[in-house]
Length: 401
Ligand SMILES: Cc1cc2nc3c(=O)[nH]c(=O)nc-3n(C[C@H](O)[C@H](O)[C@H](O)COP(=O)(O)OP(=O)(O)OC[C@H]3O[C@@H](n4cnc5c(N)ncnc54)[C@H](O)[C@@H]3O)c2cc1C
Ligand code: HEM
Image (tube, rainbow, N blue to C red; front, side, top):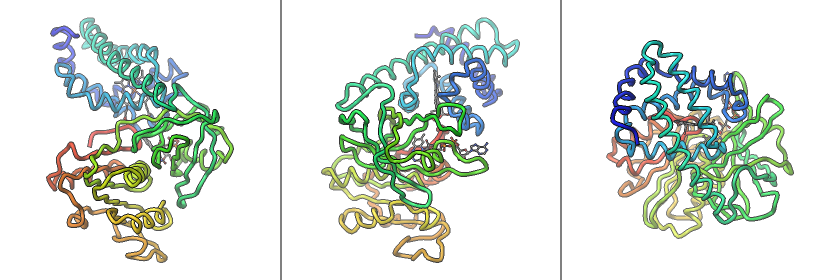
């Protein structure tokens, strides 16, 4: 518990935080990663370069200060971060390092405003937040270890099959080297994958959503090759250098984005590009178990060449009457067949399928780039869908919609 005086002092620093903006967390990460370079094996340095992670941390710190007198409103955010932390195997001792650099950052950036009482109040406030995370992560690690087929830390898995799904996406089928069962996961959750690509000076950890229903003995992930000015480290390494028979380190399934629907609840799965991976897991699980409600598969991608799992979804739609699929191609190519390969051209517009969807009581799951998820959220909110029925995942540091 924090004293009312500590709470008051932390609240009094909110304008200071707001004016510092993400410069605060950029400086913090630079400071921490230069003093503790071993953490470069933990953090994705490209999320530092792009500013995504400093922005996510800044939002969290500011959110904490703004709600320090009513922490219960932060529980969903705490859960998301704690789940993600477990996929990086974050340990309690690392909280001391982060705390030290956070306080020193405030001391160095705030100048005269960083009085002893401000530094003391923030030290206490940080300790409280760190304790909340450490306690939650302890529970999650224990649950992962105690689940049937579960484990703690990283576990070696063999790539037993590598299968091309489109020009950009390849699936990896993973079986544990020890040959024992693997824990079930909730459809929508992800694995942490740790590799030491020769193209990087550091160990790299990335998350990949499980792209099929749980089966107790193996996992499937489906990875998009990320190209750009500089190509993505892990995705290209997986595509180019990791072959069938190779062994990779895998952290237990985690994540707060997962399907939870009653038997009759209509479920609407909305994705763009590689954002279809958690949706596939949800879809396959729903088709396998006793779910009787209607299912809608709404997917957007560039064109037929990058349209992964197209035949799979088409076959399932034929097989299951309650599944309806609609696909948008942003720029169909000349070989793409309207009505057969895709339903609409251009960017996804949910209004085109408003009549088709059984919105009453439906739950909506969405995954894709942030602007896409934002568009979906805005449309659904305009339709009057309750916030509690809209669930989304973003494949990178989270920012508020
Ligand atoms: C919960 C979650 C689930 C996920 N699920 C999936 C999934 O199912 N499938 C999937 O494919 N991905 C998924 N991701 C994304 C995945 O974790 C990786 O972020 C992704 O594969 C890119 O990693 P990378 O190492 O290839 O790219 P990084 O090396 O991390 O680079 C990130 C991006 O920055 C660009 N870049 C790098 N350096 C520069 C530079 N100097 N200048 C300009 N641009 C640069 C790269 O081209 C790349 O696009 C998920 C992420 C999360 C958080
Ligand atoms: C109270 C302290 C902490 C807070 C408030 C915090 C906050 C956050 C937030 C907001 C994210 C982004 C989550 C998301 O996008 O879903 C994140 C991710 C992460 N955190 Fe923490 N964190 C804390 C402590 C730590 C510690 C002690 C470590 C270990 C050194 C750590 C390592 C990471 C890593 C590796 C990521 C992923 C980064 C990436 O993808 O680039 N965090 N954290």
